[in-house]
Image (cartoon, rainbow, N blue to C red; front, top):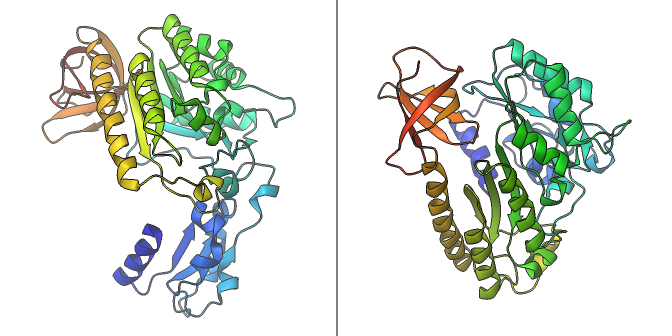
Length: 389
């Protein structure tokens, strides 16, 4: 496993260091990690917020990992019983001009291929006032764009008292902060309410961008995945967005080679994607996650075939992306500047989630600018703009 290789590599580079492991692997299989002699401590997904307070346990007298009994290394609780989000208030992001605010964690969906409910627990929301407080802090630190993130943000607020929706949270952020630009993270198809779609497509302070996981264009595959919608329902959601804003960026996730996926199922995905007005695809070949129901399904697909199917979908996605971004040549787009390039040009992200490059001699990192789009970059997935003002 890649994680173990990285742990051993870190130890080889510095045998005197202490290695602390956290994240989903640590939450699900803490004993496997604690048994590694190179590992000093293992933290679960809730406990990682306490890493700094636990550092005194690591004294110079300890040989990293080897002098600590495996069970004494483990700080991992039963995350299925946790009722709150970890406190991850962040006011700056190194090397990022856009900020990210976690509004929710965990998931109740239990898709058959996904380990997230076991690694992150049930869906929990960050209280409204904490979200507002963090965004105000980020605005005060000069951030022009905030991205709302989480495992299942469309489920936001259902566990709060009083209950809230993602649309209501969005309206509260717009009303109570001076944030210039808000972007929503990935949202499940059945959680694209009319209210939320109207908010995004009509309010200029919200980025014209939806990322929606499809996973498959075949209803039989969606059923085996334990996804609770049909391909036709997905189609209608996308068409509703497009009818209200034909320039809205719509990105989708797809999984190729899910157990039992036939050539007919694969072609159903291709047909649906070709018909949809999407701007880009994220395609992943299926890979087993031990502990999920999909991992023990019959008719597992050869990984090579899954990769071949993924490549076919990515090729369609590349054409879709080029068709989408070419529509903006000759227009002006608002760009949050991310970083300088070696050729004295800058790179930024438009509200439509399109990378844009343009020349400028000044230091404009982190600024929000209007740029005139002049051409599609030679890489085909980036726009070129005139000199900034």
